[in-house]
Image 1: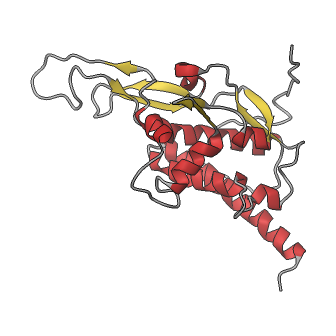
Image 2: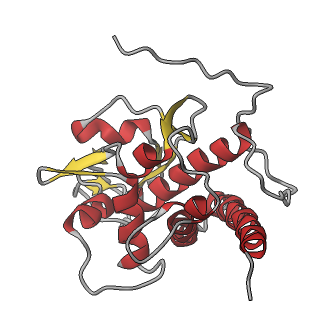
Length: 241
């Protein structure tokens, strides 16, 4: 029979496992394996998602109370420009996807209670409805291959995949041979849903580092990402005016 102590020890091991999954997936993502976003989404769901039928790992560990903080990306833009807080743009006119976005991995954060970070703060709006981190993660895990696959995706998630509100380019080439993308047709970044998962993982790993979550770390030798610690970063309270 499993005791409470046995369960707590297992939960702590799983916390280390899923934080490790996030780090390794981020490293692989940055090497070009952007489908690691599916694994990132799955670990985020395990860590944060509570429902009538599931209990998150943070809830099991008592780590999501009102005093528990997650470092979220500083998010000041809304409407069609929401993405500018989360992404940087890359242009490659020689590839099949001339416009792509990457996670900004910025070093300025806004601390939020876990519940607000996960299911309170609006990332973007679609068709009059606001969408949160929870909504995007669940769409990827429950519909787009993280844990399940559906034939039809949620409208807001398809819109994110097309990134039709984001930056676009129209390229006109006069050269021999065909271009690797449709000439003269607006081109949008089609990997915004993947880059957003990479950005959310960055937020969580920054939180793990700064608040010293009780994880057993397995360093990745080539890993060079710098995360905040209490020795190299300061959290300044923001006073509402």
